[in-house]
Image (cartoon, rainbow, N blue to C red):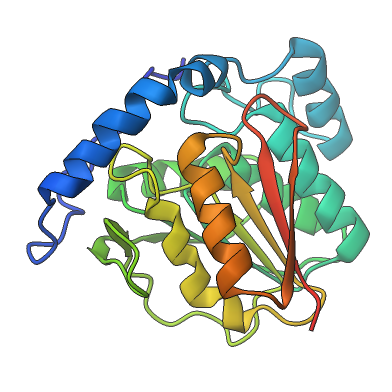
Length: 244
């Protein structure tokens, strides 16, 4: 079963990234106004949609865990598979490992292969996820990635991911958790210049108020991308496509 709250970030937080009063205030305010989205996120999608996803990927009946809460829901996972089937990305980078890591790896395996790098701040969870993928017949480059101070003026922290490919065809963003700061995932745009024309960004939980602010900022900062919010699941997904 998936716990209500995400795993604690003990050991991943950098000593030089202090939480300001503004950071704490943002979390409190957005927690108050964002509770309807948080409640809806407890559902990971219907059993029928989960079964359809398992059959679509040819996975074992018990391959996927209980979805919902801080995990990706079936709507977001189906969108990932749709994209990989249609666009055949050669390089996928993911922030926030878990059920989506298995789905990406299996979809790549079924659609011509490709390189997958998945980053998560929880070393033990990364080890368990790596073994879980192996048990399901797929492999990926899973990295235990601590946090560092956020780049490009974004609040909170971002992944200290180290070297990544010069080109990223698909960027999947499902972390860090909003409880660090409602805009914490905005720092993913530090990698947008590596996305080639036709490449795509998928931001999970995009219907939440904090992610809507991120979307507005991205639209201003990156006019060479087209962004649209789709409601395929319980939490919404922002799809960004590089146009030029």
